[in-house]
Image 1 (spheres, rainbow, N blue to C red):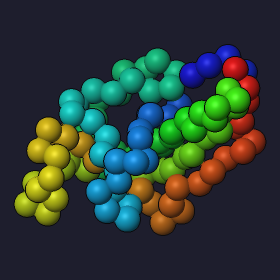
Image 2: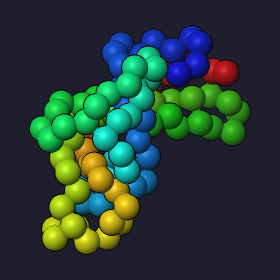
Image 3: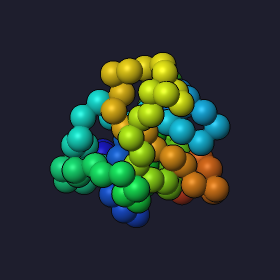
Image 4: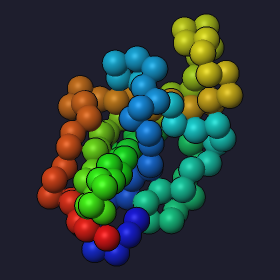
Length: 106
């Protein structure tokens, strides 16, 4: 995270362009991720997770997309694509939200 943000809690970075279903986003190839505060998180099935993506505009302004969900192991029988991905995030019913109040400029 950059200086000046007002992120209210630690979140794990994702790329919402890597959605494999309406509420599933690819998350990790390994069992450990680093959150927005620099903490190492060991992933486990059903673990609650807060995720985010920085959306950076040409003028340097940054906006955040956020979501809440749970870690799930990638089931290759259900989703045979992307066999290199070990973990997914199942996004909860609140979906992906744009949070302009977290906006800042570089």
